[in-house]
Image (cartoon, rainbow, N blue to C red; front, side):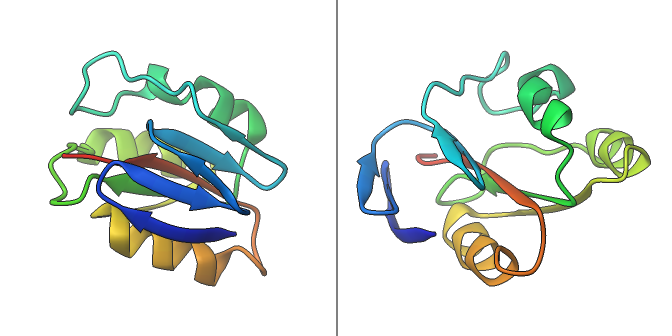
Length: 112
């Protein structure tokens, strides 16, 4: 569960992270880095693809500046992964709502 989020910081199950994260049901990857920074690419989601979640919640940063292209969403949908992208505060709420009933992963950009 995500306990809290503010610009540049997120608390997950009582532990604070200050870098972008991917949250799986059983662990947090705090070393997530994207090839193009503010443009999410399929190659940025290799481990997520291996995990095969039902839903991928993408936090696009506090103001929502990280781009998630329609082509990426389509490719993920074709793999059976529903995508929900939103500014990170909204993505956090959505993740917490979906988590109990679905196999959900959250990829969250914490800053801009």
